[in-house]
Amino acid sequence: MAALEKREFGRGMVTLRFRFFLTGALLLVGTFFLQLFIIRHTLSLHQRFEAERALGLIEGRLSGYLELLRVLPDPPAFLRNLAWLTDELQSDPGLVGVRVSEKGRPLLDTFPEGVGAPPWPICVQGYQRDGLFFLCRESELVPGRYFRITAAFENTFKIRLFREALEYGGLVLIGGLLLLLFAYLYTRRLERERENLERRLSASEKLAAMGRLSAMIAHEIRNPLHTLSMGMQYIFEDPESAREYRPLLEKEIRRLSELTGELLRLSRGFEIHPEPVEVEDLLSELTARFRPRAEARKIRFRIKNEGVRECRADRRWLYRALSSLLENALAAPEGHEVELRIFPRGNEICFSVRNTGTTVPEELRSRIFEPFFTTKRDGFGLGLYIVKQVAEAHGGRVDLREGGKWVCFEMRLPRSS
Image 1 (tube, rainbow, N blue to C red):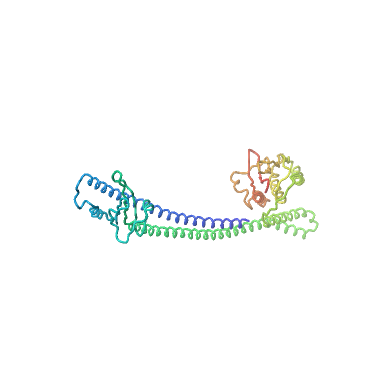
Image 2: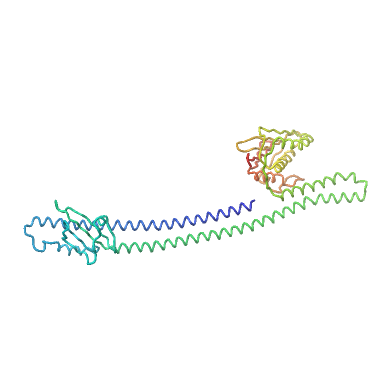
């Protein structure tokens, strides 16, 4: 189950990294095109501003010329047409040509040969063609007289700037994409290295666990085997002593059987099969098993069910976990009490096993749920570990609470495991 979850988590991380890479690439491409749009729009605005400025100057010169004609009754020959304006227009390097007309009659046309003005409606809005920018305007230079002015401006500088921006922006885009790809491949490599380290660490942990398990088994089996060996030797030497040594030998055999049972249950894993469990039936079975032992040790034993009729869990493992908690609780001294209490709490069902007369030292609280950790002379150190695994397999948890001279283990399971 854990390995499957790790694989699913790894696949999720790979997908997440790819999405980050794809998102970053899309952001870079989007930023690139947005930059080109802004540059082009800025250049267009600047060019229109320069064109309108130039048209304003032409209008000013024409307006002054018309005022001069109005005050001069007999103007000189060079002022009787607009040829004089041609020389002044040539001083503007960006101006290609100007066309001035009044009521369809051309007054000035400096357009180069082969360059024709675009249709008037689109020219008024500004029009680009063949590397030129055209702008038209109709102006009332003197009262009652309307002139149409069409101007053509050099557009190659703007095109050159836009191409340079496209080239430099493209280089930045390619560099950003390559850097992003490098980061993506580098993180994949780091992820593979991390997975390799995790596999090696997992293998080391398994070897360490096997070593601890082997040492524990050797330690736990050695004493019963030694007792069995000595007992068998006494029986062979003195057959009449068989009745005396039989209870001891049976006890050691039972201890070996319990140990192998614990190890078998642990090796089979914690695959659960939840089903509806009648709580009262479960409590009756626990009462029949543990009340006689409590009475024999003069311990007050109580079971309280506070309105829980049914829960959904794996009955076998739930019974095993509650049995382990009660086994620990019954280690209390004589005259104390053990209480198993079942009650609902929100969306959870709580199984609380409380006993008086014992405490858990502060330095041991962080280790009591570890496998093979025990403070008992005849314990295996698997009881609380199995309780924790059972709770987590059902999607719940187990907590330790203390108060003065009592200890309480509270296992919480969701109502629907």
